[in-house]
Image 1 (tube, rainbow, N blue to C red):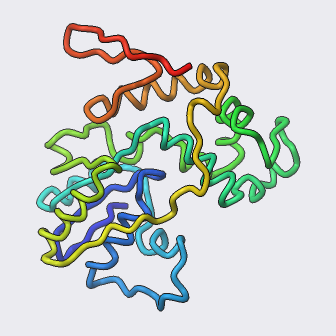
Image 2: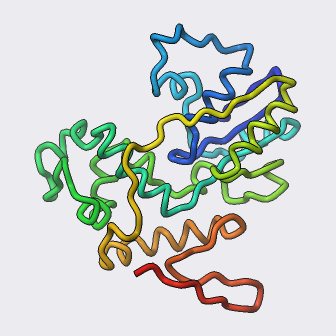
Image 3: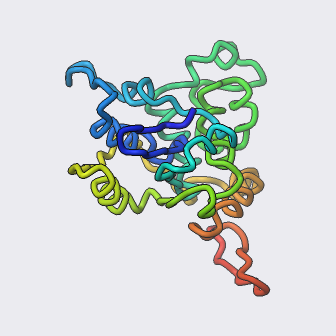
Length: 234
């Protein structure tokens, strides 16, 4: 499902754990077709009920070719870490899975970061929420992030620029809220080398996909014909 604001001819593809709650809240504030519930009834889930996140479908995206199309990406490692800090610690998603509660596959509802990420595929298989938030970015944004697909791709670090552009496009004052941020922070220093190695195939794919926006700190990045070493995180 494309998140479209027809009144302003805006089209947005959401990537889980890449500021999508904040973007949806900002879009709702300028969408005349949306009725926002009274403040006391608004929760984190309100914005996702108004604008559900769906995977990319080329034929549906093509229907909005004349709209101003955008998406938001996030550093792959930080995005993956927030699956643990937000979905596991903050929202306790693992306890909502009967398979995990029953201990199938040796999984636990309260894993430490190393156990969780070393068994990420098993957790994705057992929990639809974990799977949804930890899938490859291209499944939500499509295989091409170039100008033929998007008018602009923002990083989460560019939220001020996004708010400014949305303001110009909608002729409204747009404030980009910081919704659903994780209460805890997790860095590479918190993980064992074995865990980093387990995540490396996924991270290599993600950083390769987002090579125009982020440098892979866990491997090498190729610039044209040159290979530039990037310092590894120990």
